[in-house]
Length: 389
Image 1 (cartoon, rainbow, N blue to C red):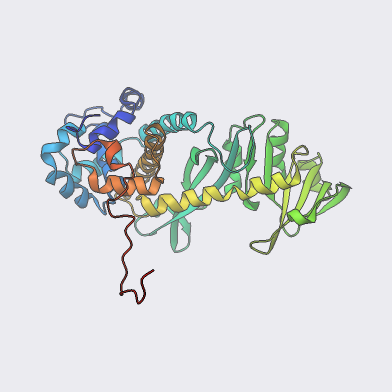
Image 2: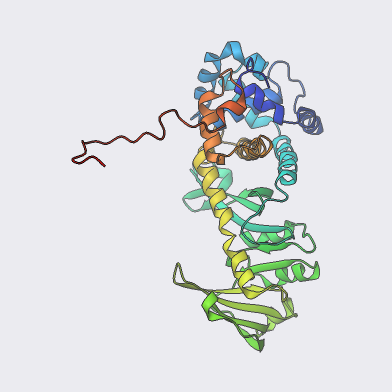
């Protein structure tokens, strides 16, 4: 990475171009394409994500202003609003979904030993979804309610590094619990979910696959206690019980025993009831693991704040999914850059810096490194001191 290359070009060093071309060939993305390739499309959309562009016209105007530098950034085709809109509408979104999955695989290896707050050697995942509201008149294919449209981004996130490892984009009508049918469960792994995923028939598959689930119980939960363990209430624990389901259908769906843990959070003054099929870990650790589930909420908040996934550049389902998958790939790319360059900045700070230096000819390590300002330690006073100290 030399100083003669723009920052955008240096970012491309972290993208496996040959694997991207393989994804393009898999779905025939460049079929009958002469000037504007799938890679050109990806770079234009990634530019829009990094620099917070508002529309296709905004993308076109800004990139044409940097026309002399585009070739060295990898953009070989002429950037046009109509061409980009047509590419988003017709080129298969799975090209960018598969490429994002390759970046995710690379990022998970880099963050394999990352600490997430609980000392646990096994893989630990958080499962949740976020809803993105849409206009029904513009997105009729995503009808959610009578006068509202929406899509859901279902995400399974590896807590080590906060890397999403499974994503499904569906209509707003798809209930969260249905995503459990699509998961490929990993034996020995921990899956942390909220009460929206409480389906005992589906949860029993976790036990059959030797996986651990941790979820919250509903208020009308019907059970009978079999055994109990003594707990230290100073830690916030209220109970640690072995139970069995009482309901006729529930007991058939989940014939095994469950572990019920009561916990009182001293910070929020709220009581939580957790259900799990793990009887080995201490009850306090189970409560701490569920608290780590909050990282996926932070992830959803981050991508909605720093990336373009709330307003879309196209109206078709393919265009929406293309934009979301490219946004996810940009998030993972920033995480890879942070880890490989050992940058001591948050992902949000890195993206903010990149947004203003993308076409500057400086080493990327220089702009992403914190430097002590010359006068940082000087103290300034708004008024004179009355006495000398």
